[in-house]
Image (cartoon, rainbow, N blue to C red; front, side, top):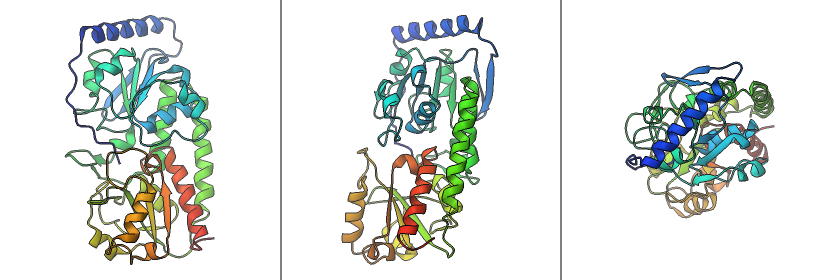
Length: 342
């Protein structure tokens, strides 16, 4: 589920304009000697082109940040923002080297102050109108952008919610995000190694799938009007890999808000719940969610609640990202611990 961003675009001061011009000039200078460039990829209906290996990347979402860090690019990152959780294990040292521009979304002016030569993002709500800035807005200052294809391919982002899937998101789309960024950044070998490692982990987790049907519900946040996963986004990758049944697989909305009476009526075998460290909704942590489930008269008699079949995942693992693989592994292990799979 994307982090809500509701701010008008900041009017850019003259200093930011100068910084942007400087960044574009530096990129042109590098382009004269960069071998194998220019490089470009088709991205969300646009062409993302770079004339030299980017050296000052700003990533506007945690998912995009963790891909870049996993590719070993901390020394080429000028800033990060929009976090829901602690950084992925193993990346703490590299992450500490990169300036955090904001825990939520920074202003466009703040991003341009870092003199970026590439801006990446996981969500259109951040890299778009009403967010930090649109691709067109950054383009006016000579800054190319890259948006995760998981956010724009087979997805309708119209409206104020989290959008709806017009197709089924597959793990291959996340792999392609890795390989496209690796190609733009001239680290193809690292990209191939990262994808291969994730593929091995997916195969190992999928081998633990239960033989009998197990129903599951994914609750991201909010106890008053809870956000539950529809059929076809990031959690759907977990569902299909393990042969599970999402009790809300009849909706293509990414994270529809569904009443507790309807949830109780669907009565899933297992509850996968977000364990978030941000503070923008009610019942963010797994502890708060479990307390609500076990005290609310509508939910406390649900099968998963009575049997305490809870699987706590980070928000990053529930969103389409390399952390989705981590979520798949955790759900697979939890099903075995519950005695629902081998």
